[in-house]
Length: 167
Image (cartoon, rainbow, N blue to C red):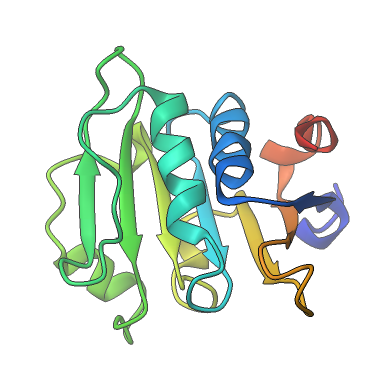
């Protein structure tokens, strides 16, 4: 068996507008299942919450998906019998997993889709298999809304995923 590094699957997608970012989240939701961990990275205003809003729509969850900055985590139960969406903002979390457990979420993380903004270097130990979504803003006047999204599936769970079909 190869190392986790050997199992990484990566795709790049250019996203021109906020609506397209939300649509990407909707398409990505079709690939997600209970227990999946999605780490989002990108500077402020890159589109992390917009992507998560699309994930929530695609998963058919209750409640408006907004930035959890001030509450740190929000749980959005499914309206369709699917997994709940746990949306976490780890920007202010310094202790990683210990602080995640202290959030006292009223759902089982193994039965939910967990999306963590600013989670890189903090919550990877939640799962050997995870999806990293890095959102990079374009430069220049014409490209002010354009984002380069790099989606990397880490681990066996993502080895056969159709990530390249998301574009």
